[in-house]
Amino acid sequence: MRKLKAPVALAAMCLLSGAALAQTASGVTLYGVLDEFVTNIKPEGLGSTTRVDSSGQLASRVGFRGREDLGGGMAANFVIEAGINPNSGDTADANRFFNRQSWVGLSSSWGEVRLGRQNTPQFYMNGDFDAFNGATQASGWNNVTGTTPRIDSAIGYFMPKFSDVTAQVLVARGSTAGAPISPQVRGNQSLHAAVEWKIPTAYFGVNYETIDNTRLPFTAKRLGVGANYAITSAWRIFGAYGHERRTDDTLALDLYSISAKWDFAANQNLAFGYFRVNDKLGGAGHGNADETSVLYRYLLSKRTTVYSALSHLKQHGLRNSFSLGGAAVVAAGARPTTPVPGGSINALQLGITHNF
Image (cartoon, rainbow, N blue to C red; front, side):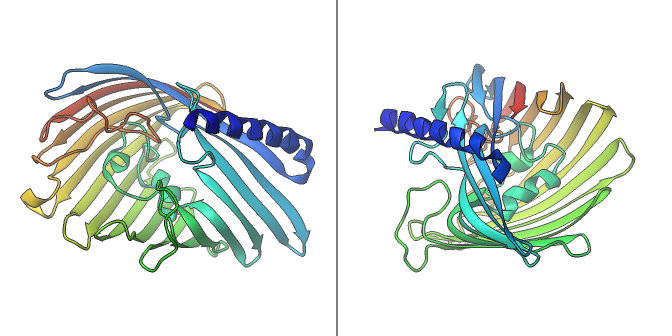
């Protein structure tokens, strides 16, 4: 069935594309990202592997966004967005084509309301929490945190900016991110909330989420706090703290991240970072881990970037299962990219990202 779904969906995309281009004046835009990289990963105890993969710095996708002016300051908005794997031409999700976003909403001076599958506040804020923008193998924050990137059947509200402060609330009943649609029953629900303050030289944000899925024997709860500050026009430092726990006491982690970005040229920058996860359950949990990384980015244009990352992830417990991932890497977590329990991982990543 999968072989049939992708061509049918792609044919529909072509039809939509023609409609989108014809309606550009009405505010419909076709957009996308293509991200491909080559990586060499050496997990301790398993030997090295080299592979080509997709979505290291940004998740590869194609999407449509639209806006209609309804008058009186009100507008109708929508986004439908499909994840793709450029290395194979396959869809990123075998269960659905528009797996990343598919929502419609209204906006006005009172803010914006969205209905449908949406990015969570945690997803939007990750890029401000560390110098790696919450992606690539270099981002320990991305590799270890269990933050939910998006959620189904959601009602979202975005508060209008007030004194450089914004807030977002997302409430969902029914299916959870990355899973087939599940029954609309009590206990299958999630709540996401965030507040952030942002000016050109500084940022502070805090978010919280709770995920209750009837198919799991626990409720997941996560807190994230992050900030960044521009020391000079070339240097910006980042810091973040996170806490994750499950109500059945099978997981309890404290997460710490510190990083910096150096814009040493108009179109080039380096990011450095250290990440630490402390397992509060000791031997019964996942074990401690830390990561040190460096990332180089060269902007060939406003739309095209080449990047390279060096990363070292060390695990300190016998129950570890951490791996080096990226924005939406296909093979992340699969053998042989995950080391033996308690082992370390060394990796080199070379990639290119193009936005259109």
